[in-house]
Image 1 (cartoon, rainbow, N blue to C red):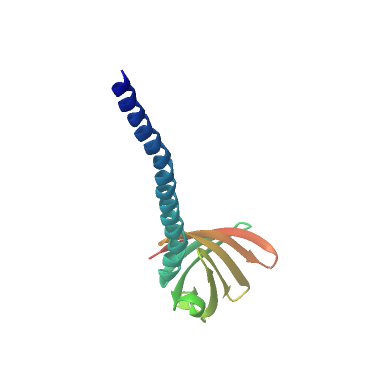
Image 2 (image 1 turned 135 degrees about the vertical axis):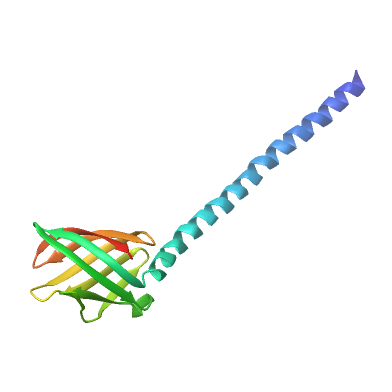
Amino acid sequence: MGHIDGVLSDMHRNVVSTLKIMPIKGIFDMKTALFAVAATVLFSGAAFADDLAGAWKISGDVVGNAVDTVCTFAGSGDKTTAACNVDGKPGAATPVKVADKSVSWDWDAGQATLTFKGTLDTPKTMKGDIEVQGVTGNFTAAKQ
């Protein structure tokens, strides 16, 4: 029986040392996976902002007043501008603030200046709030 006890004791040590190593390996795999997810989320906002350039159809409402226009975004980063149509013609380009998935800009619509504060849901859609003369409404936008 002494030989069997020795074999069982060796097997027990191998099983115990394997069990001690496995959780540590699992922790490193989990940290690697979490890092990959965090990096994807972090850089996906930058990718959305980089895709902002182009024409966007804006539809919204402020206290029952429809807001329908096309805004064309140009540039990238802190050099991004937006020019929204007034009576079917491109208006003056204004600076756009871009931070991760957040986008904000002003539009001089003639009778009033509208401030848009939106969030990119996907590289081709955004939604948010419109503020004009102290009144707030909402908007959606789709890249054309």
